[in-house]
View (tube, rainbow, N blue to C red):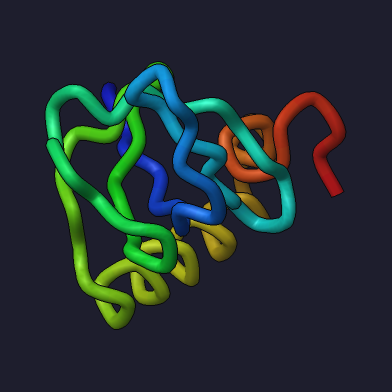
Length: 86
């Protein structure tokens, strides 16, 4: 199963990537597939690439669903919180 994780762009980098915040963890994400995404926008991230730009409501709904999944499937925590699941 492939899961895209919503994250918010917090900084654009000169190399076409960005710092993206996912549940308080900042990750380097390649923006090649979404073009000129701006700081503050939400993107759907899969294996280090932003796959699409999404709106905030969709991002928050998806994060809520993933956090609910984490309660019954702890492996989801690594997707949301990186190597340090809460």
